[in-house]
Structures are given as structure tokens and as C-alpha cells.
View (spheres, one colour):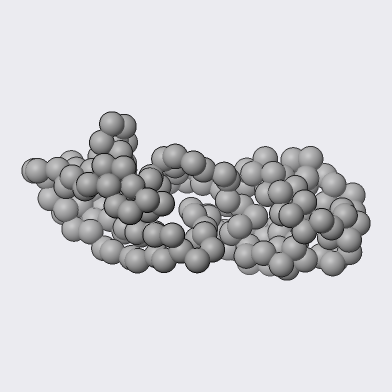
Amino acid sequence: MTLAIEIVAKGLQRERQKTGLSLAEVARRAGIAKSTLSQLESAQGNPSLETLWALCVALDIPFAQLMEPEVNRTQLIRLGEGVTVSSEIAHYKAMILSTCPPAARRDLYLLSVEPGEDRLSKPHPIGSVEHIVLMRGKAVVGLIDDPIELAVGDYICYPADQAHLFRALEPNTLALLVSEQN
């Protein structure tokens, strides 16, 4: 589990450009050196959770917004492979799976699924997205044309405004589903 500095660099550049602030001004507001911010925007270094948090405060954005890669299609994160940040002051790591777009609604569901017939879902309203974290068992999940096999701890995100499925491969499969609508 490592921090994907390229995602951080792109996020810092994108968010700083949205504000129209200079490197020097963002660094001043965050209480860090301008050279540190410049290195981070160049995908160099290994920022701490505290440094990233200070930058988010300076940019007036939610923490996870900085870490969110731009995703237009299905997104898969295997257990242990996601973008993580670590604290300098505690044995604490956070793996960001997804941020919530502005004005979106998210509903959470706990799915208990048994092998047998697939759960086929027709397209939901335009802009709908589903996020699933597999908690127990194995399953095939995602768009009907391109489903992906998940193991415990894997995360998948896909556009739910297209036909999709959930197929349990083991008894007592358990998953967390987050349904998002804009």
C-alpha cells in the first residue's frame, strides 16, 4: 500500500489551478516551503498525511478530492493496492477508495449473496455509479460486457447507468454496495 504520487501531483496541480493561486500562496497558506509544493506537483517526494491535509485546507477542498484520480469508467482497486497516505504521528494509514461528487446522493447496502442465478440489473438513471467492496467470499461484478472477479477486500466502481451484474462464486458472499446518483 503506497501513495501514488502521480495522482497527488495531478490533484495538486488541478486544484491549485482551479483556485488561480500561485505556488507561493498555496505553500504559505499550508505552512510548507514553496519548494516542497513544487516537488509534490512534479510527482517527487513522499508527503505525509499532515502535509496533504494542510494543502487541502489551503485549497479549501475535501481531503479525498485531492487523491481522487479522474475515472470515467470502471475502476478496480485490489486489496492492498489503493492509494494510501500515512500519518507522521501515529500508526495510521488511510486508503481512499472514492470521493463523493458535489450534490450526489449515496445509499449504502449490505449484500448477502449465494451462488446460483446472477443478479442482473438494468441500467439505473443516467449518471448513476455503484461502488462495491467485497467483504467475504468471491464474486464476479461489474458491467455485463466486462465483469471482473473480486476477492475479499477488493473494491470496484462502475457506471450503473449501464446493465450490470453480481454473481456470487462462493456461499455466504458478503459485500458493501454504495449506490450513487447525481
